[in-house]
Image 1 (cartoon, chains in turn red, purple):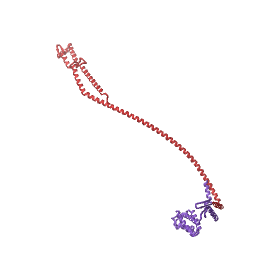
Image 2 (spheres, rainbow over the protein chains, first blue to last red):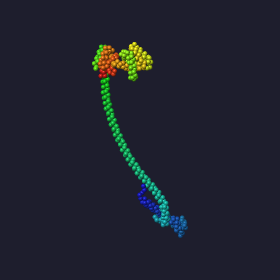
Image 3 (spheres, chains in turn yellow, brown):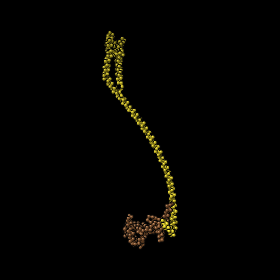
Image 4 (cartoon, rainbow over the protein chains, first blue to last red):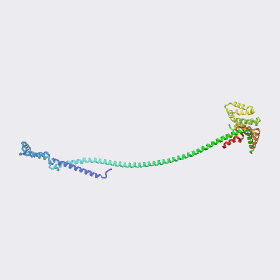
Length: 261
Length: 175
C-alpha cells in the first residue's frame, strides 16, 4: 500500500540531508580549528624556521646564535642555557594554536571549497543513489507490508471461513449425533416392543400349544380307549355271531328291505 | 382300458352266452369267476402279465375252471385272457352280467353276507328288493366274512347296508 502523502516524505529526506551536511561542516571546522598548524595560520616548518631565524644570542642571529648558545652552555653559561630554553619555548609555541576554535581564513576557504565540492559530489551521485536505494528498500518494505496486510486479511478471511465451517461442522455433528440418538432410541423402543410382542406371542402360542397338546392327548386317549372298546366289542360280537344270530340278522335285513316302499 | 372297449368285450360275452342258451347259469358262473378274481390279487396280476405267453395264461384259466364251470364259460374267460385283457377281466365280466340281466329285463343285486344265503332267503330278498326298487331283481349272493353279520346289497349305484361291520365302523367313527 502506498503512502497517501509522498511530498512530505521527500521534505523529510531533504531535511535529513541538510542536517547531515551541517554536521559534516561542523566536524570539519572542529577538526581544522583544533589543529596547531591551522591555529598558527602557517605550517609548523615555517613557524619553526621563522622562530629559529629570529633567535638571537651574543649579537648573532639564526643558526649562529643557536650554535653560540650551545657552545656557551657547554662551558656552563647560564645565560646560554636560558637562551636555549627560550628558543625551545618558542619552537613549542609553533606547535600550539593560538585559537582552538576559529581556524585561519585561508584554511576556512579551502576547507569550505573542499566541503562544497564534496557536498556537490555527494548531492550529485551519493545522495541520489542512497535515495534510490532507500526508496527501493522503502518500496520493498511497503510491498512487504502490503503483502503482509493482504496475507493477514486473507488469513483473517480464511480463519473466519474456517471458524464458520467449524461451527457448521459442529452444528452438523451435533445434529447427526442428535439424529443418531433419536434413531437409537427409536430402534431401542422398537426392539423392546417387538421383543415384548414376541414374548406375548410366544406365551400365547405356548398356551395354545399346551391346550392343543392337552386336547390331542385327550383325543388320543379317547381314540385309544374307543379303539380298545370297539375292538373288544367287535371281538365279543364276532364270538356271539353264531349261525342262528346270522340267520336272524339276515331275516331282519330282508324284512327291513321289504318294508321300504 | 376304455369303457367302450370293456363294453365291446362284455357284449361279445353276452352274445356268445345268449347263443348258447342258458343265460342265467352263465351269468352265475361268470359272476362267481369275477368274485373269485376280485379277491385274488396275485392271480389277476399273472393273468394280466403280457410277458407270460398267452397260451400259458389260458392254460392257467383252464386248469382253474376246468370241471367247475361250463365249457362256454371257461372258453370265454380264456378268450379274454388270451386277448391280453386279463387285467380288465373283472370289469368285463361285471359289465357282461349287467348287460345279460338287462336282456332279461332284471337288475343285478350283489348281495354280500357273512354266511351263505339259502334259496329261500335269496328268493325272499329278491322279492323285497323288487318291492323296494320297483325293478325285477336277480340276486347274486357272495359270501364275504368281512361283513361279519347281516347283509350288504348293491344294485347299480345304490347300496343297502345292513352289515354288522358297517355298524361297528359307524360306532368307531362316532367315538
